[in-house]
Length: 115
Figure 1: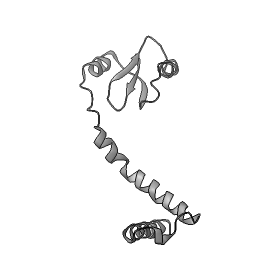
Figure 2: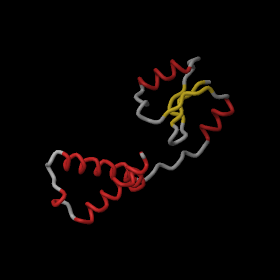
Figure 3: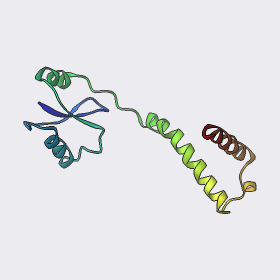
Figure 4: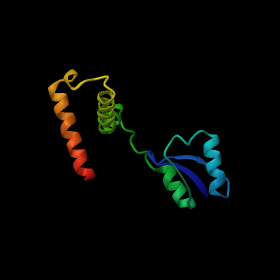
């Protein structure tokens, strides 16, 4: 049996009598499941029953999701400030000293990583 499993929740998102993973993936695309983190795999009847009876993984709260993106957003903000400074839209004197100090420290650390 071939199924499409949502990796985030562990739930079976789609299963049918198809004999190959490629058909299952096409069915998942048609069912608009591709936005989820999915896995197409062949499993035994016992594994299928186990998955069907398993408790779903708890979904992260919006606060947990925000926290998970904080580091990436910090980098985005750094890059934006760097671009604005390079283009002359912002000048260093426009930024609070604490902000400029933090950006400078991070730029120095980033240079050390690439050296």
